[in-house]
Image (cartoon, rainbow, N blue to C red; front, top):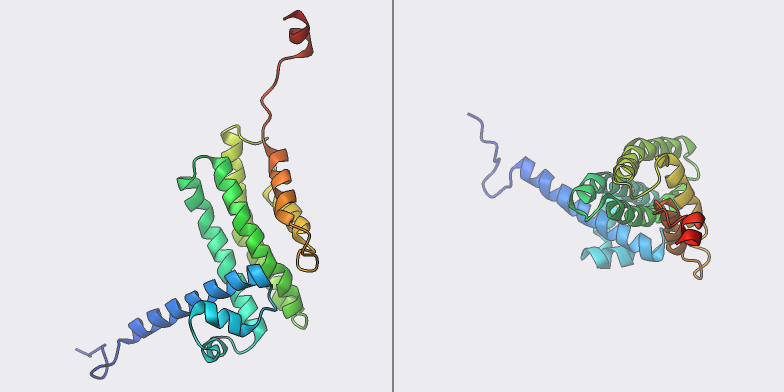
Length: 208
């Protein structure tokens, strides 16, 4: 029977792959956090400091900034996709889950808007990533909207793509205008979705 552990003192190949994957996930999580606060043009040394590694480690995994931005983009898409069902199961209500998910989505849009600049010479690659983004996130957003509508917390009929597109449009320009906080307008948008409890009619008020 072959020895899968290899030479004495050497970790199994599977263990090495798992360690490398964990290290890469740590880098991507750190980069995503830095991108949210400082934009996709943030210094690599800031990302390295947050991840607790040297700059050489980042360049070894991601030779160019575009490589890093694309990897963070995919990482955040998956994080948003996985967060939807988790939030729906653990939040106090479907609407609360939707609000928390939208917060994650707004953070992600910082990277998405920077991706276009990072991939200026790769239009087909950007289009493929955008299609991947829609395939993964539109169904998750739709699930959250349907659950909130079924609970009578929002008006029925809101389309996931339209909501995501609207939020995306509200987030444009945040990088170039520090006075603009898109989250305030996104919150107004979500308030507009909320179902209204009917108040007393005019006739009832007059006869009461």
